[in-house]
Image (tube, rainbow over the protein chains, first blue to last red):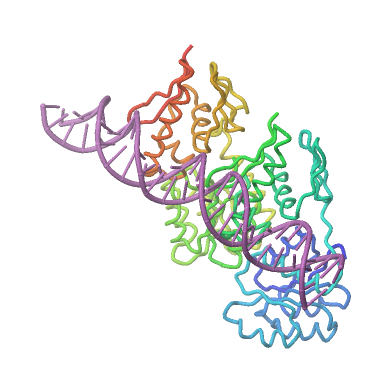
Length: 230
Length: 230
DNA sequence: ATGTCCGTTTAACCTTTTTTAACAGGTATT
DNA sequence: AATACCTGTTAAAAAAGGTTAAACGGACAT
């Protein structure tokens, strides 16, 4: 499935709107419902690939809504959004067939990962990124292909090498902070991941040696910057 | 500017966290404060490029916080986040010097556009950009490359050396006050940073020795001035 | 299951960058 | 001239980054 459809039920209009838009940006097709009743009215079998439901909502809470949905389509995956204090209540959540839950406040990154994980489990749908070909001096970078072609031959990039290089190419001549890179690629900003990243910086620098005008500069205390000089 | 720093004051932890992360991913450097008081404690002149303040917050509301911030740095741009019902109150908002406001619920894209628009407006003029490559007598300074080429070979500049030299070159023959340099490069005008800067002045002076006509003069009690004599 | 391969992480050690500290000179003010 | 306050210089401590190799762990083939 190309654009997984999400039933998003969240009564806080601020959070709801932001989540709705974020999911859209990430290639999903979310439908925002502002309470449990609207969620129940909106759900139709076959119309959605996954449901993300807030627990505390007016008119009909997340559990009630989930039960209704499951009675219509027992296969559809459900993720609950829950306050930390409601953690224990998730026993009930899993009883009604929850696939996962996230405690508020949560990071969008985490939400995205959970959604992807659940979808991967439940459907064979794959998300295809835009295949890109970028020419940087004498180098040809094909992100979709994990490959970097240099005058002395092509290099097969590993997953992490590829994601990091992509991040730099997307932000050419701009500083990519360590935090952003770690969050985007390692999904966790920790000491060891930071050191791991340093190892990958070294690898990329080695690959880029063939093109004189291309350099990864370090911005001390901030991050790194891929610069292309003319 | 490279990574605009944002003071983000929002008491709703869900919205706050999501916004914080979104702004980070979009290349900003947000600092999240959970109430007005924390916002006031966090703000320091030179530490931020723009403030995004929720109006309704515990301890200190958005207006109070804005007033404090403006009394410290009257130039800093401020955007308010406000409930629709509070629209009329924005008269007061503009009185305390708001640059823009957004009514909740809002779309992240709108927020992004407003931020960019405000930054464009406020940062133009204050930022005389220099070309990638500047020739100063027998020296060639390549800002983008962190390098200074002298007759006796190229010098790789560190991040701080580079930023400081850039500031001087942008203000050739003009006094750069200590305060301005500290705010722009160290993001905090404190005693120790001032001494750190002195160390860097010494380093730059050493590098510039090769070109007789180029000197960093001290303007006592004010700052420094890079002069080029013919 | 078991072993091997390969990407990734962890660890140890080293280098560079930046900050802090201490002291020595200057400059303005009274 | 005495004082207080800046600035210059140098060295050290502290923080951040660079390099390399071994350990880990999942995927795959045997």
